[in-house]
Amino acid sequence: MEKKDKELLKEEQNVKGNQMVLGDFHSILEEGKVWKTGGFTLPDGSFWAYREPEAVVIVRNDTLYVRAKLSRENHQVQILDNAKHMYYSAEPVVIPEAGEISFELQIRSRTQGTAPGDLYDGYVSLNLLDFTTGAALDFFAGNDKYASVYGILPFPGVQVPESKGTKYFCIFKEDTDFKPREFNTYRITYHRGNDEAVFYLNGKEVRRERNIPIKFNNFTVALGIMTEKDLSPEGSVSVHGQTVIAEWSPVKITTTEQ
Image 1: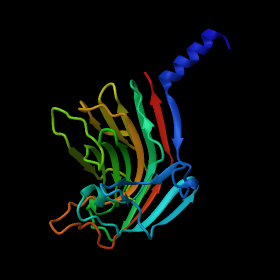
Image 2 (image 1 turned 120 degrees about the vertical axis):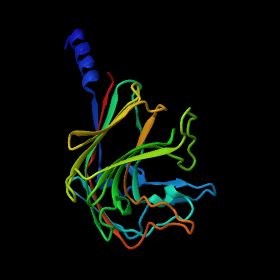
Image 3 (image 1 turned 180 degrees about the vertical axis):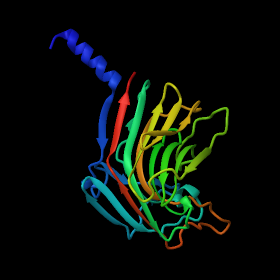
Image 4 (image 1 turned 90 degrees about the vertical axis):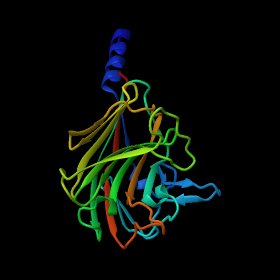
């Protein structure tokens, strides 16, 4: 191949983007190889693990299946109470300085014993977490409703950059226009240069966030079983015997430099 042809090919690849697949669920028990147990190190040096002790984990046909009767609670810290069983990508995905990065997968969520119409009583998640800034871009899928989520959060041990606006926030947008209890395709894109994030469901744009106040640097990809119930004065109220059944496909990650 001539030098000119090689340069044209390189330019074409930069425009079209590079692709990788984050899956390899057959290695899910090999802690830190591709995935690791989610959680946070606490001020006393202990680790709060997002792991349900009685969870059933199955890998087949390149799909990760987890069934868990919820039991984990934290009575002091909201973020520690929310996630019940979660896997983090072993390494964060670096965000390109210019261009767009996209994360796409299929999720199926089925629950037992959750309150009808109450997404936050138990759901399945895709979380893109930037532990250098506190950023989170998420999809939450429940039995009969889903939500897109955009926030800057006080993750334990994370220093959030100062901004002129509200330092910590989390904006949820719920909808029922999806295939309940079936596989749906979820995609989140982020453009660092444009300070913009876009959420897609089954190929349709469902949300666009412009003027994001800080630059995100990298995303740890998280797959989770979660609740979102505000702590009461007495502590956690998120567990009452409900079960969440989660299924995830591998995550297709596409970067476009131009």
